[in-house]
Length: 124
Image 1 (cartoon, rainbow, N blue to C red):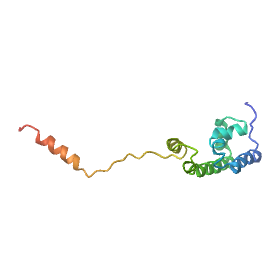
Image 2: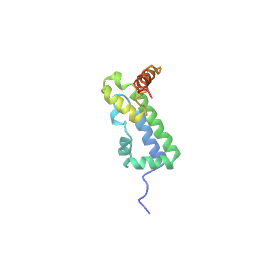
Image 3: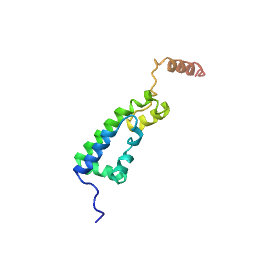
Image 4: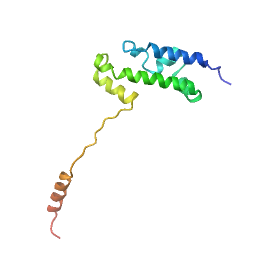
């Protein structure tokens, strides 16, 4: 038997909803990470993840927090509160964005290389 849970149902959900209401561009970095939510609730971040698995209402509230965080996040670069390189890094971590380095070509270079290779073969 472990410690009693700090999860208090509606009280815990209300605490997260209060954080969501306080979130703004000016206070963005005070509430942008799951760690800040955990600190506000007096638990570690792993507990937040466990509560999300166990309590659907809490999971929904955390998703609402993430939605507002992500919406505010899009406005950070124009507000000059974060450098573009930091914004890109956070986009990859929070929003799942990726660098797209796919390159398309017509096959022209492959045909040229193939021709060079076949032209250089000694006669058999």
